[in-house]
Length: 124
Image 1 (cartoon, rainbow, N blue to C red):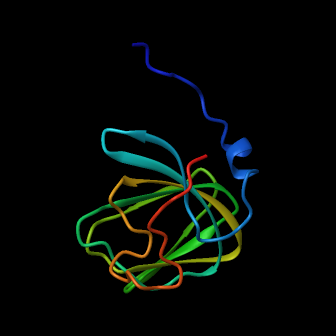
Image 2: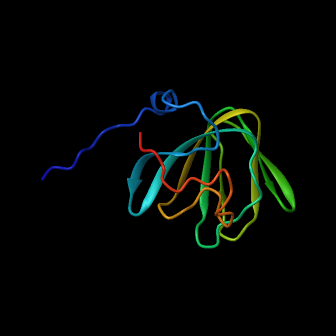
């Protein structure tokens, strides 16, 4: 059986949703998921006990607040937040962000009962 091999246009995928802090799955490989999300405003302080997280800014910018510093990410820049590190993304203006992380990663990490927790992600 031949596998489906297709390209993904990020602008097209981002045009399919407008809400914030609600990641969508746009690809999977080796137990990892490629997700897209729009950030606006502050998220919540949280950490992931077992997963590292990769954040790549596609459009806009956001700040990653860590307990000891704040890192500003601009388009084309990425950062990896290691497992166990508390972090809080903050976007003063809307940002389009690509995330790459294990499929088991919950967007709110240790805050499983947050209003922003998304357990069943939509696939685009």
